[in-house]
Image (cartoon, rainbow over all chains, first blue to last red; front, side, top):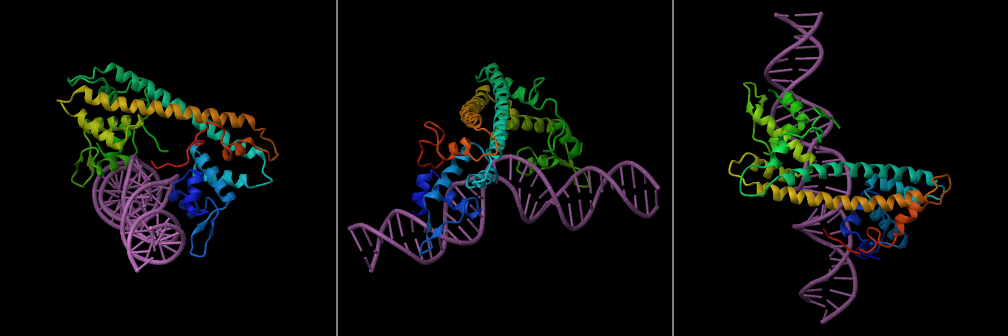
Length: 143
Length: 143
DNA sequence: TATAATGTTTCCAGTTGCTGGAAGGTCAAG
DNA sequence: CTTGACCTTCCAGCAACTGGAAACATTATA
């Protein structure tokens, strides 16, 4: 299987498949006499695995870790669960953030007449944060 | 006001403040005799504006656009509302994505015993997408 | 007043996860 | 034999910063 066939089956762009072996996320595939990459079923399965894991928002490094567990007969499901649970918490956190963002922005948008006049509660709201608005309390940050 | 004071008030890292004038997002500040950047109230207000807009998820380019409207006496609130409404739709879309991600991952996590044995529905679910799961239908993509 | 600590400047490089493009080799069809 | 679709490598760039080096300025302390 040449790279474009493998990429097609895995649902990834060819460039990305090449990239994944460049960075050693998936093992370097066999090469044909002319130097073409050649993918077998196991290799394609790993590509699918990575695509799915990336869609779930796992970082490439997390994918590397998961892929290591994926191919490990002596893995414990606890190891996997730990990683997935952490990711789940991140997702939940992001959801909360998005929710408060959405609420505040929706409030500003609904307060704006959206006509040809210059008065605009959205701009006002951006420069004068409402109490409790994101960033209204913080004076410094590092991370 | 030196850069660190301005950054402190605006709630931004010093590096970021410098970066914002490097890319021309905020106007180049005045300089002291020794070449130190000097920020007045108006400049700080713009920094706050940008920080808040970034926190709302507006891209730097959108911030540029909003900042142009912010300083424009002849702006129409409709222009602002258009940008903010688009952003609001993006937030809502992201929320939907996160929700389905969360649901599927939570399902996999809850199905995993998380013990010392290798059987793991999470890994299985990553390589064998459930019907209707993200990516189960797509064979190609570009954007 | 000397010196040390902190603040500021510029510039360059690295981050994450790809994506685009150029220059060139390969392969199957017509 | 040529065309066109593949494939290869390498290099550059995207967003939006962040880190660090080298050098100058200001300020605090001894």
